[in-house]
Image (cartoon, rainbow, N blue to C red; front, side, top):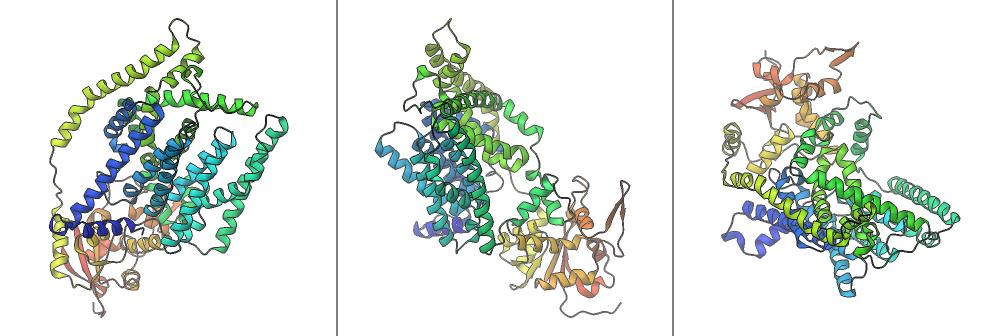
Length: 587
């Protein structure tokens, strides 16, 4: 469950003597919000390092805050692992940006290297999906090195950091097999094995170009083979459901599986909505990002062709050169943002990884004289001295953007900050109060994963399942418990619940009588499809089951339902049933 964040928070809480000063929950919230401050600061520093001006950092922060609906989930999901992990990844990216720069002094380079090492390892320990994000970063560095856009030695030093972090993470996460079968390990191991071959292909000849293609093929083949070998010999259950989901997502495999269809219906796993792009456009972020990305991308492509034709890498890129694509840290961010953006276009939940770097890259671009100089060199501007105009625009454009954002969004933000909102859900509060006062301490509750998470946090009582979706066993457990909303017999439901040693069952009216969501994505619809209770013929759906829907039938209090379950509490939203240990079959 990746509980190192809670372990660290508890140690800090005890070590700082905060028991008498602040309640644990507020201490925890304070740490998470403090990490978000570090997150934004790291983006500020990254944009500043790339552009050379603090104006870029200020604009990055402004865009991040204005678009916070799309940059972070901290406002409504504080304990998420990503809220603990992404600040460390932002620090790693900031340090990596400095490390990739040409002509930095030795002490700065050493500091950046150490910060990359520490933040990479910490990031990996905080989030179970961290190695996938680092895999994308490794691909970016691989492409950067393959096209001879930076020093090979620096890239391979970062590869060593990945290997060390994976090794330490494997040990400290109790021999987590997910890290051994991760694509990151396979890719980095393949790159290290092919290092000698890579040294012999960086020439401008036609043979070298053919060797370059073969080198890409070699890396791809080695990576796939190593990953297959690791998965063959290392026992694991790592994210098999993710592969099945991707197959279903891209139409490669049609399925009736409840879990897969339920995941496909989740908003965060859908393609992003038009509202997302509209919000980014209204804040002027998306137009400037596209402008900056296009200029940088074309400049990078020019630099790649120069390398292919045998021209050496420039150690110093001056403003007069107008070649922003020659800077390795810029090339890295261009490739990285394209990879993250591609994922965000498929899965809306990935926007929380992509949008913060959209803010950073757009702010860097409009504040960078080199970007404007690159554009003017293409346009062959002669009427005005291009260097002078580039310097003017790099200050004037962000200033104008800043004032327009201040005028339009600052009053809204102040209004939102002045609003005091209160959680109001009396039915849930009543349910939690009843559990604390009436339920036995050893009671085990069964119900929807979301409600079980609330019960676990609010009361501490044991539950059968939790809203965790990164493990196949937990997903199967959730599917089995969800059967209380299917058309199954009382005996079937009783056997399922007792197999998980549940003592109490909670039925939610909102799920049982769900009408608000898109038809076909309601829990009860997905269960009917998975259980074969819905048959599709010539475009029409026909429902068949010899039993009524369990969550409806149990409320009527007739046999056989009363033989297995006894209602002990109810309100407008929840019905609580005690699962009988001694079954009476009297009608």
